[in-house]
Image (cartoon, rainbow, N blue to C red; front, top):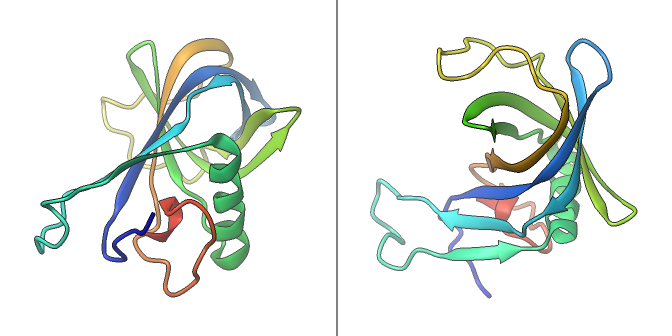
Length: 154
């Protein structure tokens, strides 16, 4: 499948997760059960690509490898918004590992500033079902040419 290089995609994944606090601002999020990552092309204000927008799925292992490639190449750490029981929390994904067939995010809340009233301060711990994750992507790959998912190249 080919992707329009000027296209930008948002990405969403849902899953049952366990969140553990490691220190003041650091947490691990282990997906006990995760859906595929859904990538959907966002509206382009210049009009290019708006008539045939793409929606694609990516498996968790391929998505994780694309994130690692982007982190190694340019230090990319995406911002993520979690929705748990209608409450929203913000964090930054600093690492993603695939261990024993489970996707594990290492996240930090430290860079998150200027909370609005719609985003809860603090971060929950425990086991949660059907958690929604909205994850940002790179605005441009700058010719990095990542193999696999287009998610971090747009």
